[in-house]
Image (cartoon, rainbow, N blue to C red; front, side, top):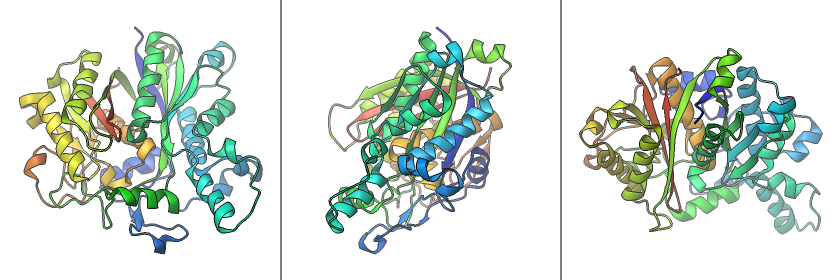
Length: 403
């Protein structure tokens, strides 16, 4: 099987409009969560979010493009442009024919849906823009990336709630490893910070009104974020021959289903995905130095994930570092795994472990080293990144330092 490496990365999220800004914020333990600024916010109970600030769509796209691009698609395109530019790739001929896109999202064009429900139901209009369907469909971002970068190979979108990006990146990894494609753009995006999106999540009663405190005993829920992370996954030999700079190597992936409850997580299901990723990577548990946790800040998720990690790693769990960057950028739902992969790259490439900020009180049910409040310098060779979604769908990736 072919080896798979990452040769490009891009992002826009609450911590920054590119990878350098995001790394800096993670190193500083800076919080990107703040007051939510959307129409009708006064009608919401939850008024905070990891919102992308100082964003002007007109600075990046023309009027015709804006008519076609929902906010989640715009974020994806901006992140992808960064990733492809860093990779140095241009897609022509056979490379274009065989390379593709796999992205994750949960809400898709929710901004477009919310705006047009207002037009039809609140304002009473009987007509909407003819491009509403291609703008709101979940595969819109995937399609526009394939068009912009001339990617004519396998392309599709994955929607598995909070695990969407990890599932997408796992599929891209497997496609390259199997020889189906030499290069894939992959990752995910989300922009659910609209009145209808936040109001729906309020109904679940898992949202915090005052901040995201993963693994802290006084945690009281998750905080939504928005943004995108896109990566260039590439066949190692292809990258080596062209002299590409390699950021990290993807070495394993596993999925599992809880098959038990639609919203309550399962320790056994999460544990199977964790151990499956290590088995697929052919690594011993003692080789893993850091885990980017799913770490939502809800009572159920954090204790279940901690228990799953403790069971999967046994005594080695006490030597692991595990942090949740959702404490800084919020929960990007379908796009969250993509932004969190950046913390894994930073750990492997720069030797900096992103912290779990807002940690205030130890919880005996989360008795692991969660890198509280301050980033840490550490030399790690292998990392995992966890994603455990509503519906009981789990996806875990394993990465190693660049070869």
